[in-house]
Image 1: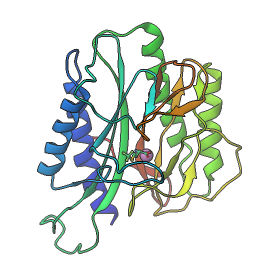
Image 2 (image 1 turned 180 degrees about the vertical axis):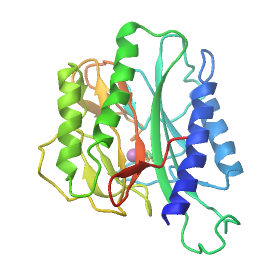
Image 3 (image 1 turned 30 degrees about the horizontal axis):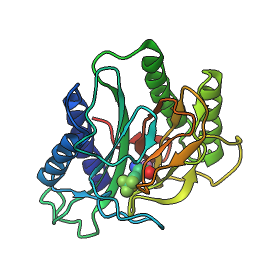
Image 4 (image 1 turned 90 degrees about the horizontal axis):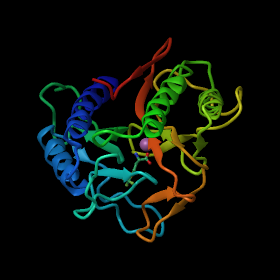
Length: 259
Ligand code: MF3
Ligand code: CO
């Protein structure tokens, strides 16, 4: 299963980096989604976000989430959401693999396994404030990743991310969190981006988790749009989001969604 997840994560990381390269002024977020859907198909994967259901919202209609500026996460790609120079866009992608029996893994007959990752990308030249937000949010992800080892607890990841982002003066989004992943897009445990060291579930070899800090240039409160999916900052401040899927090994962790 870990070998299959590795292959899934590697293929998905290539797609996410292809999407990041496609970001430029004038492209719509629906264009990015079309690119993602075609690439996932070509990779032999399944777009697991598409059709995903949560209570009180319509099924999620796309393969990726494309969250611009004050949109924090889960914004739906749209033809009329045209990226402009100076914007930042968070691209969040999930994929299950293999859709059909993979020739690379003749011995694997189980269900397709899931990885989840996100990156925030500047559109053309962006302000120094936004550049710093983006850079530090990515750093916060790696500050969390450093805590991922057997014997540590979920609270160690949470506390490390909170400490780092608070020291940088950013708002921390508390209403959304990282999570277990692998068989499903969202599994236990929930991994908040704030918390107390020495608390929460113990991390064990074989666990597969997604860590995903979300930071803002203002406060951490979010609101859900009428569309039932898009979370945006309550104060209109811009927000950045980075995410990786990791597997716990005997002595540490391996990031699955990096090329
Ligand atoms: N990566 C997203 C998360 O962990 C998953 C989004 S599911 C979707 O929250 F349906 F909103 F796309
Ligand atoms: Co996630």
